[in-house]
Image 1 (cartoon, rainbow, N blue to C red):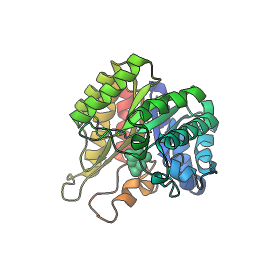
Image 2 (cartoon, rainbow, N blue to C red; image 1 turned 60 degrees about the vertical axis):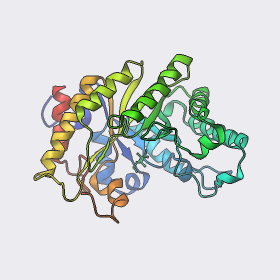
Image 3 (cartoon, helix red, strand yellow; image 1 turned 30 degrees about the horizontal axis):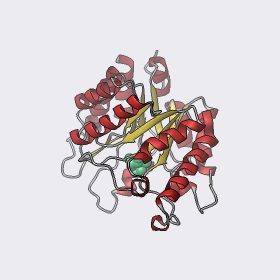
Length: 324
Ligand code: GLA
């Protein structure tokens, strides 16, 4: 395969999914973004479009139009599609006043949500992040409205409800697992217990937002092997690499490329078969909005720059997939 092959061609030849989280607005409005997503990536994830808040403008209505724009795009161009996310503690609808609900009402509400959304898409979505970020860094369960209403059982219930309505692969997704041992152990115990008891979980998603500091690729590989030994698929679901002002390397683009190369090699070697960057290009990265007020971070986390031109990290990832 020539060095001119796209990332998508390289990834497909290597049998690895290499995807990006997409947003509906630039997909509709920016032809560069649309072309880059279609030609360079093998899979797509919805960024915010399937989160409960954006999806549910009022208690009785769903607005699937933005989510459909991304899912339809992925289906149309033979890409794997990841739905993100059915159950999360934040980005809930403004009208959802948690103190108005009893425990039973929380349960009914969540069951209805999971079944409605996962059931609507069926096999048009290949993998779901069913539950996002249920565990704190110290290994305790996060005190979300779902936890307060249903206790820790809400996590397994979400998987069971999803499995009732879809054959998609069902993932638990979280951040800092390779770098926070107490959190890693707690998530491991949770998912090991699910496997023992037949709760329908197929995999774990490692977010890997490298904003200011990046996980050591060797630690990520150890984490991947540990969870694969449970019989789970391990996907890297939310990868980006940015540096903190004051500790920016001399040649940040080269350092970023080297990190992407080392990480992709380590992950593929450890058995990861799906890697997703959290965005297509730097101009649409969440880091830009999220950290703008603080101006603490460089805002160049992705493989393509603001004009969608490939960066050194893009070539490094292609080389890593070629060699892996
Ligand atoms: C978390 C969530 C994502 C996204 C990112 C960045 O990791 O899982 O949906 O919101 O933060 O904003």
